[in-house]
Length: 154
Image 1 (cartoon, rainbow, N blue to C red):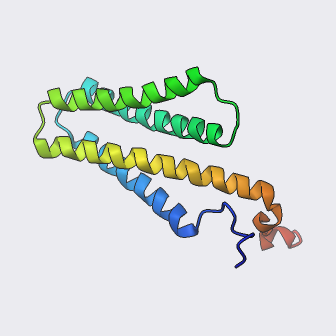
Image 2: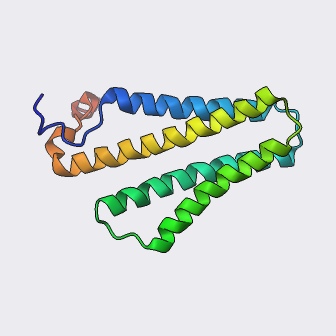
């Protein structure tokens, strides 16, 4: 493999590991939420904070990367993205601090949340890197046409 062909393209192992980490983190968090002995409104709070955190992490990662690649990013958007991520972390911390849960359950949610935040950033990075690689090297991303499409009708 030449260095030019792989410029900016994440490896299959990293792509797979990122998706697996995201699936595990989300799975752990959702299984814990499903099995939790708490009111539905509490479950809704933890679900909303989780989704808010994932969106904020992706948004911040995109804004930081855009800025690094000299794509215009307004300071207000970057500030909002940072605020949203920190707010989701703070809301989860306050929620868990005040929750009537065992310490092990609180850790379960915290680890699932942290793992998912890291993984969603890695997944988004991979998607963006593959899109950039495809734009530079479109011939390496040609998908073969399925054989059944070439067969005549019966």
